Amino acid sequence: MSLPTHGSNPHYLYEALEIEMPESVLDFSANINPLGPPLRIKERWREFFDGILHYPDPHAVELTKSIAKKEALPEQAVLVGNGGAEIIMLVANKLANKKVLIIQPAFAEYAEACLAAGCEVDFHQLDEPEWQLDLDRLIPRLSKYDAIFLCTPNNPTGVSFKRNAVKELINECQKADCLVVMDEAFYDFTEDSFTYASLINQFPHLLILRSMTKIFAIPGLRIGYLLAAPDIIKRVKTYKPHWSVNHVALEVGKICLAEEAYMRKTRDYIQLQKQKLFRFYEEQGLIVSNSTVNFYLVKDESLSLFPFLLKKGIVPRHTYNFPGLDGVWLRFAVKSERDNEALMEGVRQWRKQGSVL
Ligand SMILES: Cc1ncc(COP(=O)(O)O)c(C=O)c1O
Image 1 (cartoon, rainbow, N blue to C red):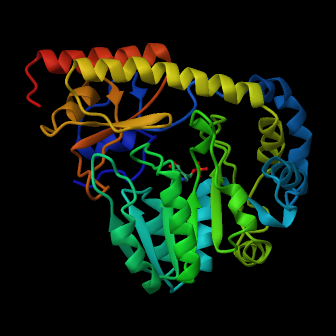
Image 2 (image 1 turned 90 degrees about the vertical axis):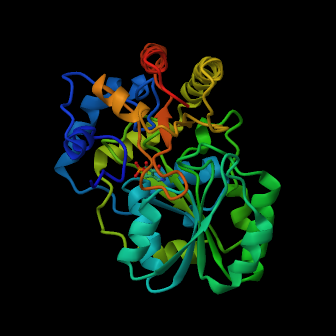
Image 3 (image 1 turned 30 degrees about the horizontal axis):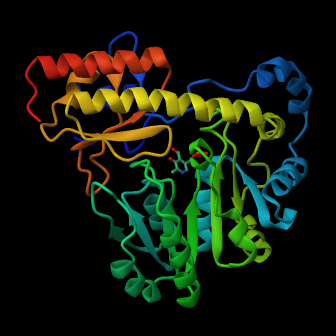
């Protein structure tokens, strides 16, 4: 049985499991802002049409300026890409044939991209249920590697690593001459949107990867970017296809960056929904990960919750391709109140029919 290695597009999952897909499904496997894209995008959509007659700006000058201003970094420290996924590929190309260490559980794309670039890939496994950095075990390994990949807040656990530990790790990596590729794809869902971006001025070996597709609910459009020292940006850019980010994405990106109120509303909504969900899981005697963002893990050692929900048209993200999680944990996005209630009802029914924890 070969299951899809990413969330979203649930028909692939149903096909792989040979379960008939119900006519309508609620997809909890992709971690997208439940409020949908900012309204201003829809209002201005028609304006973008004329722009498709021309090649887009290959240097994304205007969007780059807006990002640099927001992050208080020079424009040369920003590279806009076709989603975080393109940025991961570009960084992997820069690391071609080098030795990389991936701190896991982690987004599957790091290993896939690095292996495709001919890197030697090793893993550093964090322990459940905290999944925090264990520096005593990790630091002695650093000198063997050219780069480490670290995702904080982490996908799939939703856990934010302790800030002191992350800072110490960045420092130790500098001493060990090891690049730190830090993925902040979900930082703007956390309560205080904490970021390590300001450390780039101080640590030239730190690369920060961002995605705009989750917080602004535009995964079909694709925008992401890299923040790093200008000489790294210059190198990474050499691997980028010239017009990889289309005109509409560039225009939408600029609109999104100004949407402060929408982001605040999103964070409040997610925190409120999560409180309700976590209270429910506790009542049901289920263990959840200590998530700071818009998704979380739920533990089910019986492995029966996954097929039970799928048959009801509720799609969790399986974790069979995350070593250490091995399908025992399921990942769920925090969706709209209505969808979350449908999920809770599904879990309630599963518990009622005699699930053994
Ligand atoms: C941790 C993480 N980083 C990066 C990405 C890539 O995001 P995108 O290419 O949609 O911007 C994803 C997508 O799921 C992700 O989960």
